[in-house]
Image 1 (tube, rainbow, N blue to C red):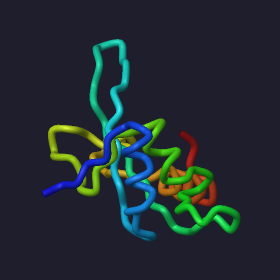
Image 2: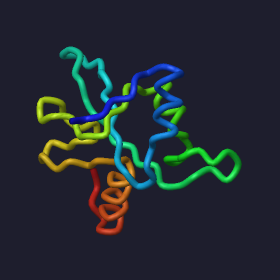
Image 3: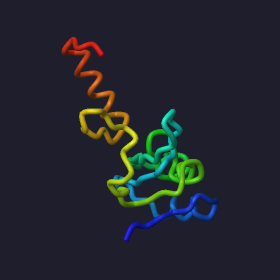
Image 4: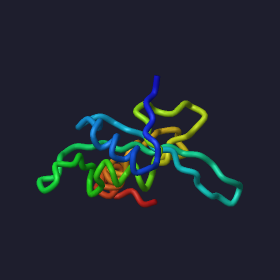
Length: 114
């Protein structure tokens, strides 16, 4: 069963205590499009600890910051009824912004224009 941490001070502190380095966590966002609102999921990985506070960090965000600003947080990927945030028309899923940057870099090296 998927574990969920709520978007509150208590939930953020609990998530910061229970976060595992290297594990993927998911948030669900609601996007506003011309054709209506749509739910999308985004993935986050905490890959290090802060040298100053010891908090788990994923890029520039601490676990507590992520939970307070983008929560609730889930430890299992949402179902197929919610699409990924970084998805292209060719049905290839780019799970993180880093994947998109790698694709852009490879296209630039090949000389392919958008």
